[in-house]
Length: 75
Image (cartoon, rainbow, N blue to C red):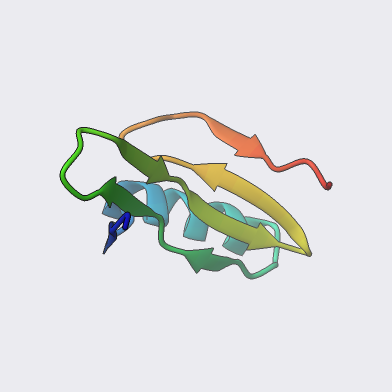
């Protein structure tokens, strides 16, 4: 049986601060869902799930220590 270990990652403070400034400037609010690290037990496989930022029903994906923010495409 495969065990998957999930560990939540906190968003970097500077990224959160930048998002707050942008949202205040645009007079809107954002919802932030922290990303996570998922490890498959007894292997070297890991998956880093990005932070999800939801603004006006549009989901953006961001990683810590990165300046890029990607828009999630609808499926």
